[in-house]
Image (cartoon, rainbow, N blue to C red; front, side):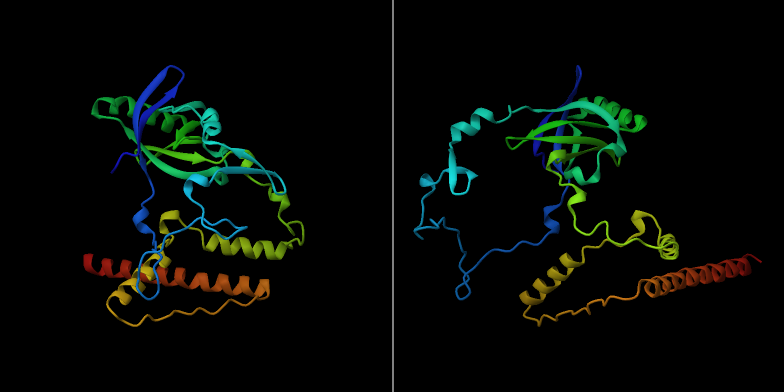
Length: 277
């Protein structure tokens, strides 16, 4: 696994040398290049003046902030450099909080944190075990690619996982979503819905989260490479139904697999008894 950042975790007077790795496998996503239709030549991008329609060179482009309609203040490279965060090589932990205090909506990109070397693995392990035993997560800041971001450190599969976080003030309020206050479920509907949720409850690892879109795209690309016909898959759009009817039928359908599994388990139990007897 390739190191993307090298530094240390720092809190109070404690310093732990670490390395940062990307936790997301970019190979598990599909990307395309833009080509000309006839010759399949790569297509580049050209900056265009929207008023004149003429191409603009890189040297003639500046950054501008629109503070009023059609009124811009020009921001030079030197202006940005003056306010950029210092190139700190530390994940600065500012405090430890309970796991459930940071709302999942704040979580952004995940990274793996590993010890810098074999000699520092013991210190790293001490910190990981302390987090695990305390049930806390570390919250602080990190500077990546000249940008400071909030960060959260938590235990994950025998190591430490860092999430870049969004700033709380970047989140909009749920209260601004229209129609939230409209409609109230009655007790019978609520009871039926709870029954359905209970019947479908299972462990996270038991839920099929296969990347169907990625698999379908790979199959389509392979078929095109081999000169085969691409077969389209159509799905009927679900039509709105009466909620009580839908709940009752859903509960009945969820019971059938469970009854089937119980029946198969009984058969296996009887068979095993017959063998031992």
